[in-house]
Length: 176
Image (cartoon, rainbow, N blue to C red; front, side):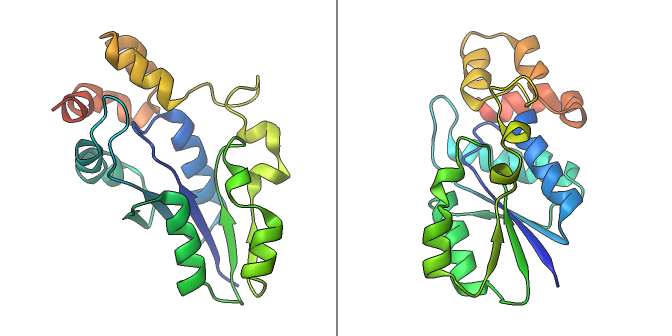
């Protein structure tokens, strides 16, 4: 049986909280697909974020098999499961505890009954709660706020370690 990790999210901008979820999927799955959009969010232009993904983030994320730029990340996961889902495989939908309600088990069971679908955040809510003491303390809103007030050090502190050497380049792409 193959295990595929599916990660939906706007991720504008990508930060260490998102990276935590991506790393969990990479360590637990045979294949990992990230679904994001090129829509604008606040001061972050979607096309700039897409450029940052392609030029900086994706090359550094070893183990991420592909990124799908879709209209709606949640809708993209549903479409993937409906069109590419295979009953012999296991699918794990990775999201923060705040987002798990977008994938209600009763809906999945009714509309995709032949697929094995697991949501790690429902199995271990504390681990995926960004606001909890055990979660990763980061949110896209906090990162956007740091950018808006021009606090580069705070912006950089929200990035995963491997992205910090590229923080200035990343920020310049986001603000282009």
